Length: 214
Image (cartoon, rainbow, N blue to C red; front, side, top):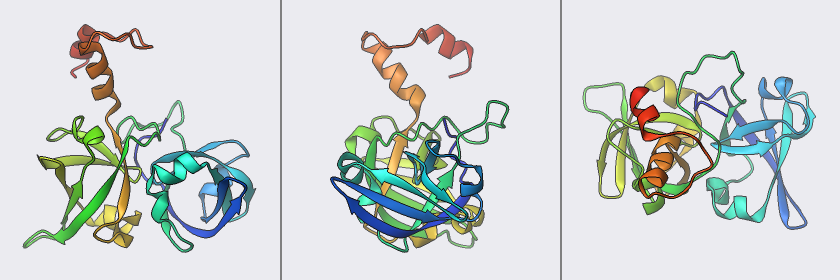
């Protein structure tokens, strides 16, 4: 499990076709030091398995499904990616529950400076499979970043971005039209399934959610 608090920005240094899969090599200063072969790591919001770990880099294999259904479809050598290690059992919960399972791919409409402010508005086009779980002031994971929805209208949402987030993530490398990985709030998906009366692999109940403040 991840929290959407990006720990480091890595750079894709190589993309290699290996049979039906693609192997990407990511250069990073700190993340490889804490990885072991087979460990999970969030790469721009996608939970991947670390392989061939070296000082300053690690690799991960992408199945065709992962390549097609995520923002990796636009990835290229030199691209910046957001990195986060799994949350430790005794760690501080700084963002929200992020599984690293992409629910859909959105599209950057624009990122514009807010008038008379140092902050930015990020406008994203949402696919229907993510829009239905997106609410005003709710949480959403974008490229592995835990963000809060400031406005939602039809299939578009607006998010306020502070300078710290722009500087320490790959947001400053994105352009209008670029695809971005989106993961909806996990709680919303559980609630939807229970409201439909469908069995879920969980003992969580509506009463328990209410008692916890959801």
